[in-house]
Image: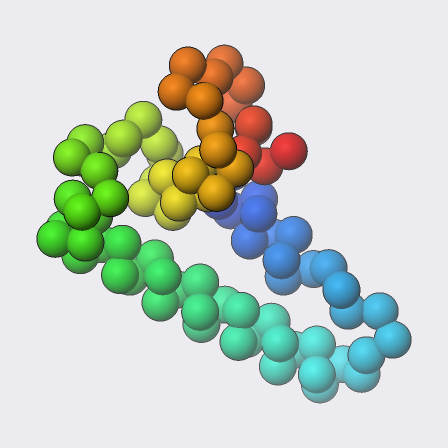
Length: 85
C-alpha cells in the first residue's frame, strides 16, 4: 500500500467510538467522497503542474505528493513510510 492509502485507512477507521453504525457509515462515505474528489482534481494536469513540474515527483501516486508535503518529508528520505508514520 502507498502512504496515501495507509493514511486514508487511518482516517476511515479512527474516531468512531460511541457512535451508532449509521453515523459511522455516513462519515466514512463522506470521507471517501472527499478523498475521491481530491484525487480526481490531482489528475488535472494544469493543477498538478502548478504543484510540481515533475510528472511523478518521486511519489507512487499524486495523492502521495500531497501527503509528503503535509508531512514535510525531506527530499532525500530513505524511509519508505516516513509520510505514514
